[in-house]
Image (tube, rainbow, N blue to C red; front, side, top):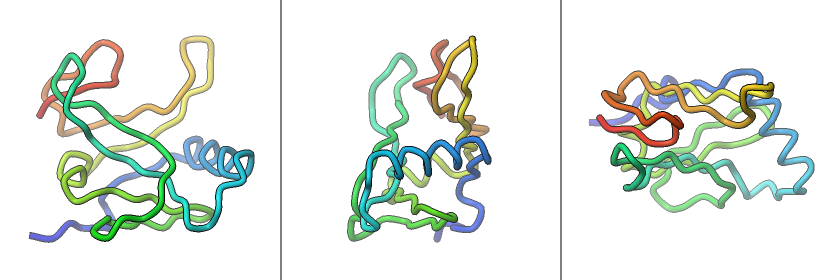
Length: 114
């Protein structure tokens, strides 16, 4: 069963703007992209991972204007349908994963279960 790359994830305009800003400030090379992933751990069992990385052999690659997103095959299952947003305000600042597949999330929003 393949993954529908076109509808795998949604990145909001505010998140795109922040990602591009970070790429420009950090002088990241064209070979480096944004890696989204899921790792075991956290209060609810699984935690989101976001980092800069180069492409691995079996990654799903999503191309956005100004940057690429790399997602390993295992993480693609858990991240399908998520929205990555960026909030910058008095009540918090940072990237936020909105996961419609999560059956349980922790209070901090950094871990989940399905």
